[in-house]
Image (tube, rainbow, N blue to C red; front, side, top):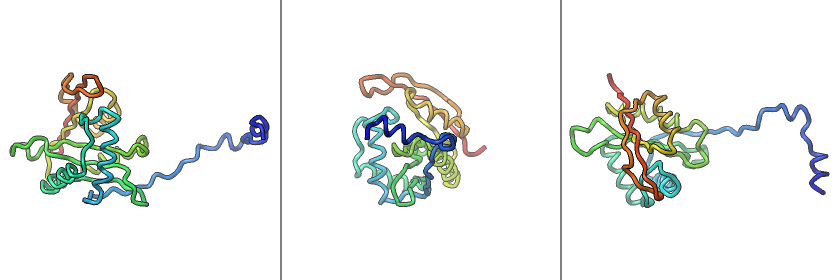
Length: 193
C-alpha cells in the first residue's frame, strides 16, 4: 500500500483527535537500598559520568567503589534509597553522604539523586527527594548540602529550592570536564530548627 493510500484510509476520527494522549502508568516502590542493588546503581551513575556534567567524576565508578561507599553509608546509619519498578528494574536512587570527614561535621550531609534515563521528567526525582529528606530527619541528621553543577542542572537547582533549600554560595571554574570549566551552586536545607 502506498503511503498516500495508507494515510487516506487511516486518518484519525474527530473523536480520536480529541482524546488525551495515551499515558502508561509509572509505577514504582521506594525502599532502602540493599547490596544487590549496587550493580544497577553503578550503571545509572556511570551513565551520568559518561554523558553529563551533573557529576564531576570523569571515570566510571567500579562496583568495588560502590560497595565501599555503600558500606560507609550503612556504617554511618545514613539513608540510601532506591526506586524500583513492579518488575524489579532500577529506576533511580538517592542517598546522603557525610559532608566532611571531620567529626564535628557528623550531622551535615550532601545529597545525591540520580534517575535512570527513561525515568526522568516523570516526577520521580521529587518523590525520592521527599523520601530522602524524611529518612535523613529520622537518622538524626541536621543539615543537607547540595552541590550542583552551575551549567545544565537548572531543574535540579529548582527542585532543591522547591524543597526549601537556600542558595548559600557559588564557586566558579572549580571543575574541568568535557574540555570546559564548570562551577558549582551550593544549597543548604536545615532539617531542625
